[in-house]
Length: 107
Image: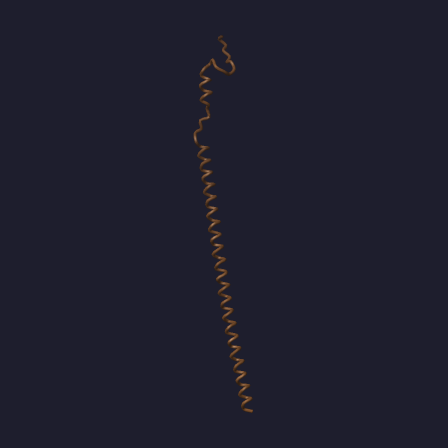
């Protein structure tokens, strides 16, 4: 009878040890999964940061290009422009060439 009681106690102790081992393994798996999830989130954050940096750089390039265009356009608008045609001026000083005749009341 004592042998049966000892065997039952050993089986109970063995079940207890196995349950503790399973709980410990489960806890280790949860910790490993949490680390994996954290690593995944860190990777996603780094990718998003890199993407945002690239986006900001591209926006900066576009802004600089727009500022350069506006500056160049402003410089052209304020630059003194030679609107006279030198060929026309040369001809207009020569009264005998081209164009409609001018009215001269003395002739």
